[in-house]
Length: 365
Ligand SMILES: O=P(O)(O)OC[C@H]1O[C@H](O[C@H]2O[C@H](CO)[C@@H](O)[C@H](O)[C@H]2O)[C@H](O)[C@@H](O)[C@@H]1O
Image (cartoon, rainbow, N blue to C red; front, side):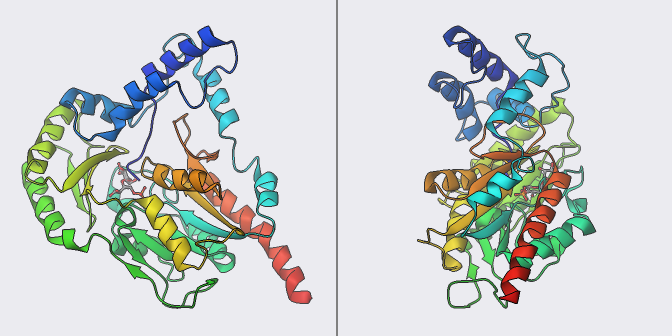
């Protein structure tokens, strides 16, 4: 998921300063004042922008947050405490979440990288653990479950290895349901949807050009995700980030129908169509027969900026909830948080433990 919506440290400091002037509490207003949103958050849209702006954002997209004291002397611990109050742990609030779901059908949406698998240097080695796989398999026994990812469909199916799930690859542009759908309110039919099909030859062309153009940048890796392309810079020396973004943008000049966004140490190239993980979530709810249903509770867990599109859909629908996976404070539309994939696994395991007795009781009736 173009990961991020990170608020740069400078922005956090400015927001804090404004809050301190306006009132002594809360320390971090949410949402941030409009002027700060405009100045900092719009940088993350990347509709164009200067190279310097891009490089700044590339740096902001993977914060280390190792400093004990923030930019204007506010301890990082305090910043985190204020953030966690706004986005409490989904494990701590588990009972509250479950009581909100009473009488509703939970539908699970799970991002892959950084949510089900830890972030690693080599994208081809981002495996999920067997314990995580078992947790996802169990969740899918009780609830319709979908994996929503920037990865291409084939690769993520290979990583996850569970045929009973729904998958939305290429940031939702490649959707496939299980051969034998369960839990669906709609008439059982297999789901297949590719809203960007016409872009396939173009994506293939841009992938080849990017491979060629970036080969002089040591550590850069170009990944073909079928309906989109990722240019990874996790292993590129920071001094070369400016050169890399120049190379990528020089290729994209030839492709006005493609756009550039950013994730966790990755630049993402994708069609300009209005389709994202949020639209994929809506599409899947509809396919499952829950489009206009009041008694459905979609739960979306993700760690990245592209997951924000899905969190926003849930917020706008006033239905379900978003859970952001992050150890650090980030601007987000999610309601709750979890720190890392192991906590995601714990949440999924608790969900199954909570559901099991209810199902047993029902089977005795
Ligand atoms: O939507 P997601 O499932 O979160 O996929 C987003 C991108 O994830 C992958 O890249 C990220 O994870 C890699 C492995 O841990 C890491 O090396 C990289 O720095 C991260 O950006 C994937 O390789 C991309 O193609 C996805 O678009």
